[in-house]
Length: 266
Image (cartoon, rainbow, N blue to C red; front, side, top):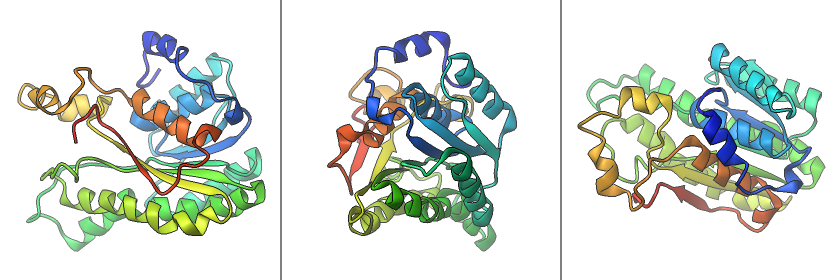
């Protein structure tokens, strides 16, 4: 199964259950791999009816098959380039028509490609924003009418601690991710009137397959021991557990907040 081993799957059974999530509908952007796949898997484990979009068919299909094998509700998924806001909104509308109104939205999709200040062009800048910032806004715009009909909901935006620790290898990514907190706080009062909660989850350095392949090496690994207060490597499931909590009624009075999951790095 993508990103989650058999032993990790067994470990998940020991974590919290939120009965209120059973049967509720959730939409996740970038849900086919990495942190997103762990979120989709966790929400399905909780009994939610999950829809997601991704641009990678192979891991997305494998994730759906793994969830079906567990006997949980089969996720709805579509290949989608989230840089196309209209395509994203069509996917949300089509998924909602099949599953029902969404109580949960997880704005997870992101791409942290490295770049320097000097090499950024206007076109590249716009493309980074189109992946890392814009989809969250238009996804929220799409699900809010349904959440109002349901009488509430939970929007969870994935932020980042990279810009907070002054990472210098991705300035456009830092701009986009720092704006997540502004989006969360800027909409909290507007959405709160309809009992729609909105929060940010900011991961630290999570050991996804991508991170291990591209960035974890003999030079960078010592940073984990230097900066984290806890000795273990963070897993995608660590983020998914926080997302499930915020999606649940256990977090019914949590809104406009940033929840950092980084093993004490920042």
